[in-house]
Image (cartoon, rainbow, N blue to C red; front, side, top):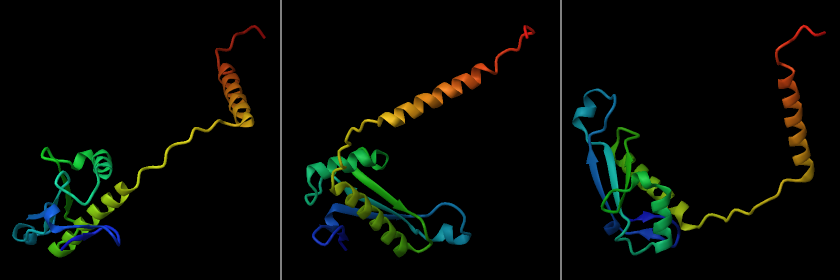
Length: 141
């Protein structure tokens, strides 16, 4: 079933692969019997739906999830139910792609106001005076 990113964007089934494994952690005997952990591999390089700029932003935003062969790996072992974990992994991937669809807004340089600079310098001066007053006391009084 394709992953819905937006009303106009779907990731087809051919662009990702799902594997199941046994989940780690506590859970009693169920952990040893049921493969509820989901690993979703998204073939980033082979995806024709996303543009090169979106792919570059995806690579930059989550380098720890990238594999050597250019796949984006998303895992979920939140619940003991395989279907819920699959839905969770798909939603995680959709959120990552949605975030990468739009370029970040460029940072505009701002200059601090004169009064804020004056306040900062006055605070520094006051702190310096306080620390100088903590020096060694001599008996010259």
